[in-house]
Picture 1 (cartoon, one colour):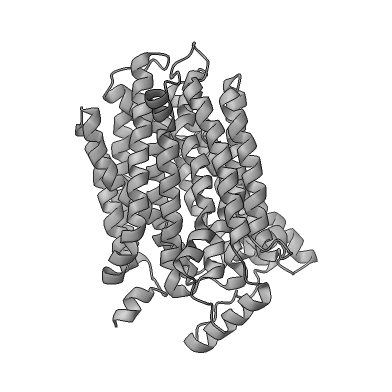
Picture 2 (cartoon, rainbow, N blue to C red):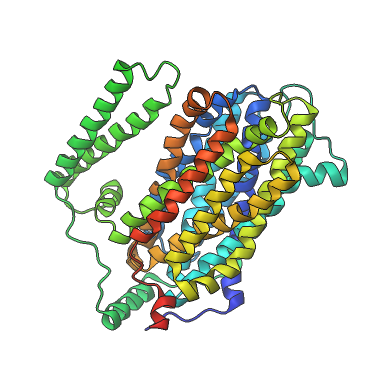
Length: 509
């Protein structure tokens, strides 16, 4: 048995839900820092408020992936999670811009991001489940198209509502402008409708069919995508003790060298190291009573046995997502300060700059949507690794160039390079990864792969405020230059990755 090649419109239908998911995600990325500042947050405190996003992804995605691997009912395997996440995200989008205080807004960010993750993670596994290997690059590229398209409209919504329809873009101090509120309401409706469309127009293979496809793949290639012997209790305990001690030592060093005086966020990093060690120790204790790798123990077992390709891609993901996380939380304060010369979030000039950032975000997302159709063609000629490396390098140079620009209109040019990099980040790593994953663990490993997206974000949230304040003396634009350097390093690290399933390259041989 082999998976059936899907038509263009079948791939379109199964990816359409990402239009709505990214609609909500883009509204969050482009406007949450603005909401936080309006409700009284200082620029250097914004990263710690954003810590909700990566932490919820770290926790939610592997759990949802694990359960979606085990789910099969009349509604499907992944589709029930699409719908549940969409409903809760829609509710969060309606509530978020009406937050009466900063801490309520921060709490709503936790809920919104958790809900987005419930829908987003199974969508990644959906491509791996439904498409044969030669169509996966197109499948993830199609997701990138809808991500870019949704983000273009969502990012520009406040600007469009203000300049085309006259919706007020300013409000009294501490009040969210009406243009932002209405944008979030529209986003909630679009998200729910688009996810519902995918749920109603797409089908899924049963676990039995997927197992048959996997067996056929093993026969034809001689490569077995199976999990190794489960991790023993002693192995869990040994690694758990090491990570726990590392967390304790890191916490003590922060305290002894007084690194916490102006940057308590560092405790988040040491706390996560400590928590990971304790989870491994708990897994060891559970394994002594029951050696079946289920639930949390199963996820930890899969993490420690992750494919080699995933570990190599983790390095690339670290540099890539560190850069884009910095862009999302710092572009608004960077542009309003560097180009518009203001830090007063209630001023007309600041809100003009903030709206222009929405336009810039729309441009880079628009380019990423267009690149979704170009990337498979480029990969066919030079391979997926080289394509991703070129895209990241172009994005890094574009980030760095922001420092030398003073005219807001010229900022549109580097957004082209940023968009090309973003389109590649959303497709190429996943296309490379899925070829190394077993079918019955697709959701779990897609969730675990998210670790390498959120860990750099958590690190960024913990240290970027300190770097911006102490090293860059409040010049936020330099933080975006640092992000550019990170992308360039990501481009170089692509070449350590082994792409075992690069069908375009193999076809040329």
